Length: 356
View 1 (cartoon, rainbow, N blue to C red):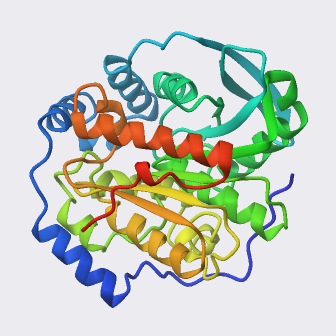
View 2 (view 1 turned 90 degrees about the horizontal axis):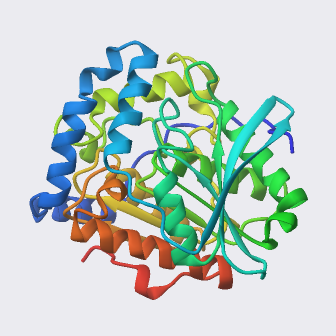
């Protein structure tokens, strides 16, 4: 499946409606402190990969992130077959990892795209989370080792996402996947890839996804939102780090990628016809506001959407799920959303925890 350029060039639109702006101000004013388990994670993250790590050589950045992820990695749950595979796309070879619950029945499939600012991350950094999602949601998870920026900037990651979908549609049955029941999901930059994939498929008239799961996603390049300003230094994802990742992914300020809705889904002015979306937002995260804005616009476009708000959590909280009760509960909600979207194409009420 070839990635076509989106049209026409869009204008940046990361603006909350007046009603949402009031709501976000109220939430900010009543925000509780960071959960202790989350705070411990953030402290150890800052030791291993401090904000100034963006100035390190690329190999050192990636090695440090891999090491941090390994510290927090949990053992695989039982009842799962895990194996690697690969295929060749139009742009070269790609590796993937399949997490298949035991049993002979074909199950729905989840295409998973890892976070890491499009610069960091691999099959290893998100291995335990993918395994737990596969068992908990009873789905076959297919995780992609996509091309990374800055060596491969946009649209490489979106091309790889489309290539993975093509591969799953062609080969999924042999891996126990019911290819008529597919969803996609990802965290942070992987959330951007998921939303981009959904838009690209909608534009081609190919409703291949039954749902999308966007976990504290990157959806725009506007670093002047209130959550960016409020959490610029304190967040597990600092403003400086996010600007570095956006530059690596999008290129210079005059790059056409910065006007492309497939790079920045909040630039899309028509969200109608997208699959149901489950979105998480964390109050201590720089990216909180864009998750709220995207959810608001999806709802206005008639797309079923559920936003789960986490007042005590920060970016990357899935990694702290076994050390933080709110992170664990949110991770369970993500699993429940994946299960109901994959099996029924609907959103689970139990997964939601909307802001008051």
